Length: 314
Image 1 (cartoon, rainbow, N blue to C red):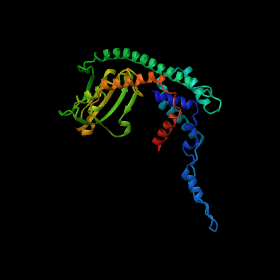
Image 2: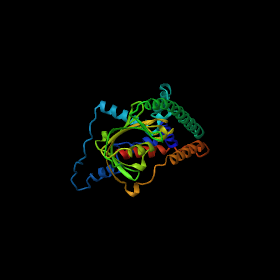
Image 3: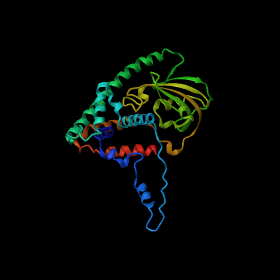
Image 4: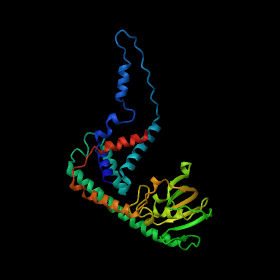
């Protein structure tokens, strides 16, 4: 979270390290310069015209779409959604982003102390909003599962997982020591889809011991060739922390088709420990809170973000 905020500040402040011409896609590189020099003939040689590929011509509509995508990628990478901004608040983010194009901007007068204060403010805002959203979702979850429990076709396990077998499979079931081949669709309890193997046009191979507890328990209830729907409470999913695409305190629905399973490779056997995950998240949160006692924000972190993003595209 701290790194995301540092990246956001560096982006809004127009860090030259982030947006220097050398880092932009399509900008001339040292190799291009060497090729250009090599194409110039020495005295007594015939001058040969350098052959270079013609740049692709984009329409204005294509450029606009690419710029929109670029803006979306930046927002996703720096975690703007985790701030749960109102429309009015978001306008100030846009205002700062626009200023990054000019020499006179809000960062010009912002020294290290001001930047640290901004970081602390946004971190506290993220935590406050996370707690609020988690509480609201937990209240919705309670009502949602009360409704499910009235359906006699939906079973409940001791852990609190609800499930419904939609197709009976074979008698053989996977265990935590297996890797399953499945097709699945993951949704929030309001029906919003957040993941699907079917959109990838191929089933997923998943070590049973390395997924969230609710999914791990549920897939062991399906026979080979069968299918089921899991209704997973937040404490068996991603808890009150949430993850990108899944808000804090969210209960999940998975529609799962078990195609096959086999013994998981030994290197894939580490267990998914929810308590350990919570401990690590609390540790990260404490480090963020104590960050104000450390050095000033390193504004060059944005350079790493930009290089990583462009590297993934390549």
